[in-house]
Image (cartoon, rainbow, N blue to C red; front, top):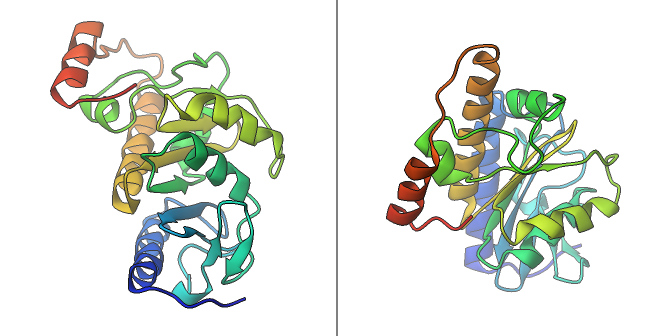
Length: 218
């Protein structure tokens, strides 16, 4: 499929390919795992199915409309519904990053987590970029029922963690979504390093101050 691309769409295609390669080269995604999308005025871009994020051709990134129709590029990721459901609930989301990043995925496999907030507020940066991180129960890859589970949380949460799978993180633009994904991965690493260690998390007063100063909504 092909379509006439506008300059802004071309710019976003180039940016997806550039930043996806950075994620891949730094080990935040492997093989053909993970997918990234960006909202456009006339639809949205999504990385193709079975594509390595380290080797994307900007022209072959899929374009879809808001009915899910494929307009241009290669066939989209089979997890397109995951992105679409979050966009539909979060009008402020300009981009979404879904990775299988090692430490975040490791946390998603742990038992005994708080499903309402599965990684504690270890640092102010995690609170500022992620807020509260709910854990979504396990769904097999490609299960359309996952869309409903995401819709139930996306209006109040910019990010969710999929059990035995990995994080889905939105942001106002692609850079913001990637930076938040990276902050989540680093905090997941801290969480795992601190297991069985007495740990001081941010308290309610400190979190309230961050929400007030930085106008956080969660």
